[in-house]
Image (cartoon, rainbow, N blue to C red; front, side, top):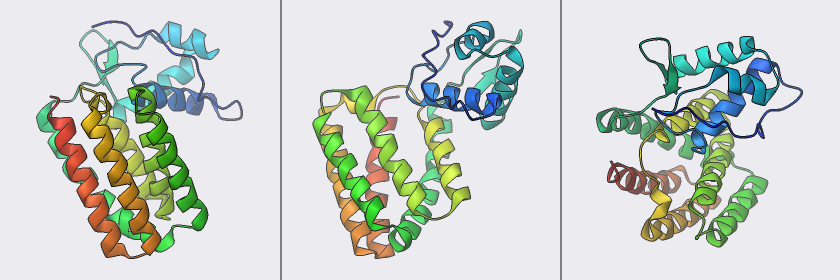
Length: 221
């Protein structure tokens, strides 16, 4: 187990409560693999990096322990959770069902602006094919827009947290050029389906995408 080298607090918003700043920072760092599964959280280094006391750090850690993104080891050490293949299957089953619900709702509620945002994201994805880490960030942004379009805050927040937790799995799918090409085509199909505003068509496109993504990710374990 290695101690994490904490990344710069790019996601922290100055107008947010300190605990929320720490939460946003840690969630982003975990999702983008700036802090990897199994890495120890250095409370003192994190407090210094974010320019705050250890109290909001502890509160944010407590929240992430509850969410399952962090785990407490014997001796009081806190590290980023490592998921097993069996745990991943369970999370994927829940997430995929919720993704279908979100896709059907998004087909009804998505705005023209959100459609254009997805198209712009697809263009960025195409241009970043040689940058796996950037592709992961762009991919996360695509799904964030999709979640917001479902017009259900609770569903959107739940899916975002599940997506971060799936990211705790080993391996990087976008290191595979074949998966990059498939993901691009699947995202394009999702956009076309959402433009139709037909929930059945949207469900079909999203179900295909997540089935392929799940197989790709689990093959890396």
